[in-house]
Image: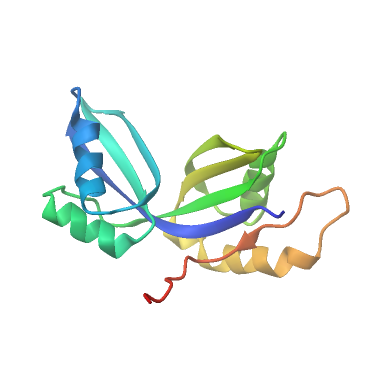
Length: 160
């Protein structure tokens, strides 16, 4: 199966660097039924920064507002999913670099069941044309290259 990469929005907030703050943030989102594709927190300037990649940005923003979580403006990121193998993320990073997409941060993880995933931040101005270029390349690969990336933006499913 080909790796998939999709453009998403991510947000961040800061919180006191003390036990239970991450749980407080995540519990508020859970109580509102918000699904996260990724979450990452780390110390930053005597506080903690928490990064969120929501499955539904509008629902996430509404839940954060209701919980009085002060968010950054949405930023551009990508989520990668695929079959785990040696060098999987290296291949994705090479292709993004070849397309002149500057990845500002990236985290990868083994997801079990021979799958992996990654999330990375990119500068918005780097995305439009390079994404189109990667899509055009789909049919042009050498036999020794890994399967091409399928690029797609998340589409909302209609509510039944």
